[in-house]
Structure formats: C-alpha cells, structure tokens
Length: 616
Ligand SMILES: Cc1cc2nc3c(=O)[nH]c(=O)nc-3n(C[C@H](O)[C@H](O)[C@H](O)COP(=O)(O)OP(=O)(O)OC[C@H]3O[C@@H](n4cnc5c(N)ncnc54)[C@H](O)[C@@H]3O)c2cc1C
Image (cartoon, rainbow, N blue to C red):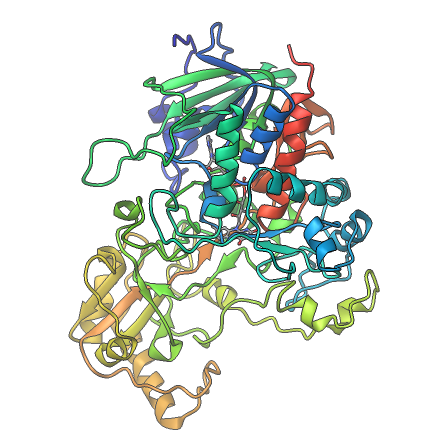
C-alpha cells in the first residue's frame, strides 16, 4: 500500500458547492471528487500509486466482466474495481434474457436467418415505432450499432466459451427490448435454486454472471470489491492519456451487523483496508458503471419529472449513480444520443405488482444476503381488482389493471408489424396508436405538487380488510416496510399517516381519499368505471381496517451516456478519442437496446481494444 493522493474536496465542501439535496439517492461523498472535477478543479495525479495493472475495469457487471476477461485473454493484467460487496451489478439480478443476434450458433442451429447486416439494419430501422409512437431505433448512433451488429455473434460464442449455460432451445423474442424485429435473438439463462449468497435475487442473471466471474478469476483477473471509483486521472485536465483512477472504500454493512458483507467468492480478491486507493492503468481504464438512473439530478437532465421518490430497480444491490459518466465528463468526455433517454420509452419506467416496500422491483426473499437492507418482501398483488391506486393527494388517475406500454419487440412492433418489412416507410403507419400509460398518468403534475420540484409524488395502493383476505396477504413487519405501509380504522385516520413516509411531501387530504373511495364504491355498484375505464370494478372498499401501501413505479434502464466510437473508446466534445478511456453498457450512449446483449458485447469489444493499447 502506500498511496500519496491529495483528496479532491471534502463531503462538506461538496454539499456546500452543489446544494444540499444534490445527491439524494447516491452517496454524496463518493461523488464529491468527480463533481469537483466537473466543476473545473482537476484532481491531482498521484506521485505514487496504491495498485497498478495494464487495464483497470470499473464495474463488474454485464459490460465490465466480459471486458476484463477479454483484456486478460489478450495478455493484459486486469484489476476490476466494484463499489459493491459482490460482483455482477444489475446483470446478476437480471432475468437472464440475453439478446444477441447477427448469426449466432444458436440461431444457426434453429435455422434462424440473421447476419451482421440484417442486425445492423434492424438496429437502425427508423420505421419501427412503439404503440405510443416512440421510435425504438431512429436515434441510435450508426457507428455504435454497426459495432454491435458485427460483434454480437462473436460475443455469443465468447460467453459460451467462458461457461455461460444458455438454455438449449430456439432463441425467441421474450424479454428483449429494441433488439430488432426481423429475427429471433433472445437467449436465456435460468436459475432455479432460489436466493442465497450465490444468487442474491435468485434470478437468471446468476447463470450469466457467476460463470463469467469464475472464468475471470481462473484466468487471473483480480477484483477490488467495496471500492467506488470517484476520479479518473488524465495527464492534463482535458488532454493527454488517461492514467488511472481513485476509489474510496464503500463496504456494505447490513443493519444490525458491524462486519461488512462478504462476496460469494474470494479467490483473486485484493484485500485492502485503506479508505482510498489509487490504481494506475498502464494501458486503459474501462468504464462499466451501469448508467445514471440512480442519480436523481443526472437522470432529471433527460426527464425532469423523475424526482427523488421514484426508486431505481435493483438499486438495493448496485447503484447506477452516474459516477462513470461524471468522472469521464470531468476529464473532457461528452454525453451523446440523449434522445434515447428523453423519449418516453417502454422499459425505462415500470410498474410492478409488489406493494408496501420501496424495493418493489425485485421479489426479494428472506434468504437473500441483502434482505436486512431491503427490509421487507412486499406484498404481491395477484389481482388489481383488489386495490385502487391513488396519487399523493388521494385521487385515482387511471385504470389500475393497466401497466405501461407493450414493449417494442415482444408485444409491440413485432406483433403489429406483421408482416414486417425492414425499413419500409409504411411500417410506422401500421401500429395501433395506444398511448395510454400508467406512468405518464402518475407523473402528470397534479394539484398537490409544490415548489421547488413540483414532484408528482408517490402512488399508494388503497385497500380494505376484505381485499387483504382475498389476496391472502400476511402483513407482518418482514413483509411490509414501516414507512411504506399504513393501516387505520378509517380512511380519515389513514390519510394523515402517509406523511410519515419520507417521500410523501404533502398532506393527503382525508376528504379526498374518502371521496375517491366513495366514488369507487359507486362505480362497483354501477359495474362500470365511468371515470378511468377499469374493466368492471368488482369489490367495494368498505370494511376496516383500511390500508395504504407504497405502489410507486420504478426507474429502470439508462439509455444515454458517454459518447463512444466503434471501439468503445470514449470521445470528447471535439469528437476526439480520449486516449486510454473506454466505456460499455448502460453508461455508454448511442444505443436504445435494453440490457445484457449490448452491454456484454460492448465489454467484449472494449476489453480487446483496451489490451491492445500501447500504453505508457
Ligand atoms: C431486475 C432487473 C432485471 C433485468 N433483466 C434483464 C434481462 O432479463 N435481460 C436483459 O438484457 N437485461 C436485463 N436487465 C438490464 C441489465 O441487467 C442491464 O442493462 C445490464 O446489467 C447493464 O450492464 P452494465 O454493465 O452497464 O451495468 P451493471 O450490470 O449494473 O454493472 C455495473 C457495475 O458497476 C458497479 N459500479 C457502479 N458505479 C461504480 C463506481 N463508481 N465504482 C466501482 N463500481 C461501480 C456496480 O456496482 C455494478 O457492479 C435487468 C435489470 C434489472 C434491474
């Protein structure tokens, strides 16, 4: 050890400079140095480094892990730094659906015609639109898509070679978003052994990431877990090569414990006890930090409606705090392709049938190692006839049976554009325009919103004792979170309790809630929802006790980030490459494709290119 860095700015200084609420959902201290850099004060280059490697990969998720393996395969020494106690990021928690096309061996085996050219034309087909008119591919960067199209099939074989056990059946379109309409490209990893230290969410993504992790460790990739990259060093503030990074210690200490949580595997882990470390990258730094949707101020650059109350899907496990973007922007990188994130697109904002906990995207079980952090399983709603959803002032605003838009591949364009003719300008006129969306209705500015942000506030599921019986809900403290679940003998007593939730900024007028429920009960008598079109409302809300459970939508994907070229090199405002800096996955821009397919492919590209750098 050793290390002789001068720190950027203190947390107090950061808060003073950027405003107290600046990092509502992210560790403000962790971001302080990169924000300071973005504001113009370049971080001092260490005269002595704590660690060094040819390639330093930031983030061990869908982009970072393949990048590390590829760089190692090419002979580079590699250190992967991750802020989490474990590897895998969102990819570990994900459903394990991996869209890869362009002529994979799986596609060939099942006689699915595809090629890099077909894939490229699909991924840039302006004529495909979702049911709300949003174009899936129109604003994709052509260079980024060409690189994806040329490398997806190669990446598929690479993943298989490194142990990923895709299910041996025909690729399909289930689970993919914006993966192109003309061929089936979705491959699947499954996991049926539940939640444990090995599989924190019990998700298919375990069988994508654990084999890759095992392969990386076997090949000699070293992991520095529990360290958050705060700064990327460059020779001069906006010129020269990237030299390395600084990271600060971020252990996961669960409530009720004192020792940091340990990762599933430890071989190859670098054991550090320093508060901060500096790592020299002799060849390159690769950013795979997973995007920006956990950073409220950053995500609001693209969509100002997304105020702090909307949780990040799987934010309990890994942060997506824009730290990669901020650190790169601080040394001259530019954002790119922002249209993909400003659009009101499917998949970015999602409703889930889990209520009574803000961790309502993943179905966390008590066996998960991070369950103490999550706090409650939530209640799973089997039938939205059993609850109404109201906004922060106690008013209904939509038909609770409806979710978001059908997505662009599985249920949307794929179904409507039948037959699909690639690039045919008539495609756009074939979809049935269906712009109704729960999230948009929920986000509409309403009478309760106040300055400075005019937040639309949380949404609450309201139900009664009879509904709880029908759903067989067990509302004990390990199933519902105290500040996100309330009960009272009457609706008038229930409404004022909601301000105990930190995100309910306004008082819900009891009279509103009473009037809403009275009206809903009338609609049940009528058998028709004249107000919002819920198909035949079935059950009155009339038997106390009454309940209010958090039912707020979550923020999911990041669709814009750092500008990259075909080699995944990060670029600056002048369109020049920043030597020695790469990026892939959700922190990289130019692609509207959801998830693991593009992220692993960009890691695949970046790892090889980074290892080929001459370095210094
Ligand atoms: C519940 C859920 C289900 C999903 N299901 C699917 C699916 O079935 N199919 C699909 O294609 N996609 C799916 N996705 C999306 C997919 O998981 C992501 O798009 C993908 O993992 C993004 O890859 P990434 O490498 O950019 O980020 P991640 O996989 O999230 O990895 C980022 C890593 O960077 C680390 N990190 C962040 N900041 C720092 C820092 N400053 N310093 C050090 N480390 C840092 C994080 O801890 C994390 O380990 C799902 C996502 C979720 C949340």
